[in-house]
Image (cartoon, rainbow, N blue to C red):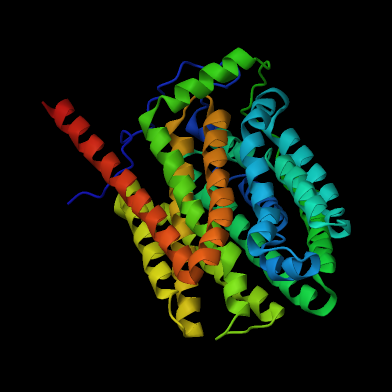
Length: 430
């Protein structure tokens, strides 16, 4: 039986959009970077560091929510907005900032985004109230919006197609390392000196990552600047949204992130309660399971080669669902194993879906990636808020129910894509 595919043609997916004047023509394969070639290692490490800084800053308060609740006398759902405001602002701003990257360049915009985000990160520890903290986090999320879509577009333009999944997998791996290290660092520092010192240290580390990123990232060789045009942007976005395959990928990214956002926003509250009653430093160390996400996202290319894109999505969804059910255990080891499976499934699914977007959109790649990132972070914001509400209403079982519902949505969308591809293949055969 042949492996499942993404629903796109076997070669590069044919663009269903008119050519964007701000998008360069696709260069020949031998002009782009590839593993072992000049600049590839520097590029990979630079974007890896960008991913580390992005996720460390974006989720710097997530492991600290119980402490923030106690400091400000805020409920879990209110404190969760220190995460949801950042991811929600990122979702709103990623598309307009991606348009700026078409005019001023991917590297320029990524550098500016990290600069503003780390500057705000150094102000976050001084927030006088939970309202100010949420506002600063929203500004930080908006600043970070310039990085994800621009990074995906940079890779699509500068890396050979056959190496694209692996290159994006390394960027996503940086996300997982950033998310993990940020939470572990904040957990132990907060236990000793409080949550303000914890987020301050994360901000300082992000400064170092931003400086190294700018020094290492090679100048783009295949980017052609365009002019800013609202009409052109709207036409490109409308064309992407009329592409059924891209819309399915956007929905899959949002649903995967809904699960992830809900689980990791609420898990700290669960582990501080009986029967676990863990201290803050130990709760922060729970995020070592992100290393599993690093491995699964980096292995996404091999999964796709063996199972096809839809097969890899099924595997990611199944692994995530198994982890959700296992996390219902009252035994700490069972909960940890559940988190391992949830993390592995999520990062694999995200790497496959995001690379499929870059592969499908041969024109207007920055906007296509921006729409994926918008959907992805809408899922994160919704997952964090709804996960906290579900936890308040039904405990951990309520959060798991929300996650399982989102996974069912991923499987349903992928099954529909499988059916569409088979009908199209049969029509082409006849």
